[in-house]
Structures are given as C-alpha cells and as structure tokens.
Length: 219
Image (cartoon, rainbow, N blue to C red; front, side, top):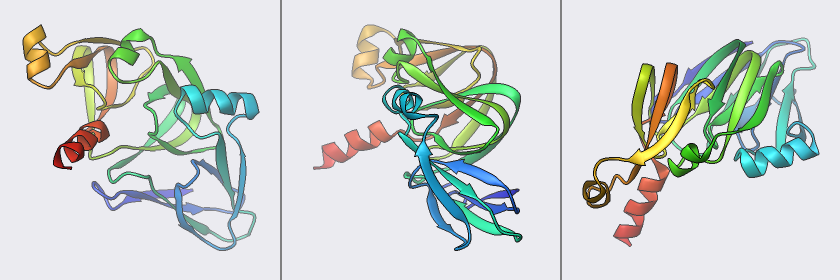
C-alpha cells in the first residue's frame, strides 16, 4: 500500500494506492473518489453492540466501510474529512493511541478500534467521557480542523478545550481553570485541560466550538 497526504495543511486528503488483495477500513463519507473496480462494503463497526458503544461513547459511526482490491492491478482510493484541516498518518507497531471524537478517518485491517473510559477530568476539559483507542499494527489516518501540531511532552502541559486531537494512553487528563476565577471567566478561556505524562501529543490549531460562537456573534 502506498499512501500520500496531499493538499496540506488546510485541505489535506489521503491519496492511497491499494495493491491486489489489500484492504482498508474507513469512516462513512470519508471516500471522495476511487477506482471503479475497487470493492466497497459497509459493515458494523466491530459488530452491532460494539458499533453502538463506539457511536454513542466514542463519537464514531455505527458503520464502517471496507475497501478491498480484488483485482490483479493497483487501484486508487482518495479519502478526506468533513472539516478543512490537516491529516496525519501514524504507523502502529503494537502500541496504542487515543483519538478525540471525529478524528479517526481510516486504518489498515490489523488495527483495532476500541472505546475506553477517559474520566471526569477529560469530560470537564471538553474532551468527552470516553476515548477512542486505536491499537495493533498498521497505518492509522486521522485528521483535525486546522493544522496539526506534534508536541513531545515530559511532565505537565496545558491545552485549551477542544484542541487535543490524539495522545498516548498512559497520559492522564484533568480539567482546571485557565487562571483565577475572574480572569478565567472574563478572559474567555474558562476551563483548560492539563495533560500529564511523557510522550507525544497531537494538537489542532483551530476549534469548531470557537468558530460556532464567532458565527453566532455575527448573526
């Protein structure tokens, strides 16, 4: 499989070449175009019950699409996301990673998708009560609204609500005021997320909630 991210960073999309026999799983509506001979089938995302859990607690779709090359030639597949922004490909080699709601786009068949409890701190920080966990072996494609910033941390790091895209599962999240009570309320920051641990995190430079608030002020 050959995979290239093009259109970075604002309108990124995945340009994929599937060799004969290769399979890729992707979110519904992620496919923008594909070769006519490529087979696509929809199925429950991990089974009916697991699919429901991922939908209501992990923010993912009940169904997932399977793209398989059953021919003897290389076929093309183009994947994108609903919001304008950057896309990242991460290669898993037995480790796990946590993704925020809606960040997942696609993955190879050896990658497993699960949902785990994220904690009250994650919920108060705007990241949700549950987290989507990708694990196993193979490529995972995920995206975000705006640009994506990779950051290595060792200790504590403050992230504004809605800007955390992905992080390692050993890290803990807790919510706190951005400053004092008055500065937090009057400064417009409110609650922020304190990420604690060692490893790599991915941040998005834009926030859909902030965009929605800005649009409402203009109406």
